[in-house]
Image 1 (cartoon, rainbow, N blue to C red):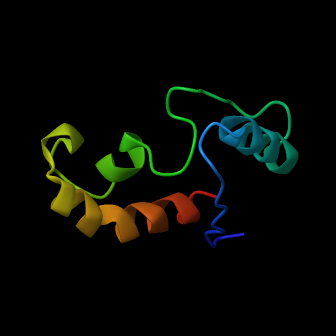
Image 2 (image 1 turned 30 degrees about the vertical axis):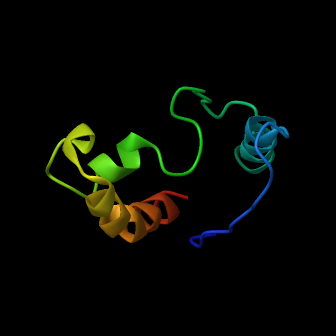
Length: 77
């Protein structure tokens, strides 16, 4: 894989269900699924690309780190 695929949808239309379905499809039923951090750009991915606490980052800083956080996510697949 190694590349990000964007999937857009409407809120409350089953986004989490689709993400969990795709995770199980690609990684199998034994893949750990934690709904508190499940999905694309969780705090943990931002924590990997900055030395500061994620909660202390401004919106502008988060936006500046987003490409690096997405690259980190892609490198983990």
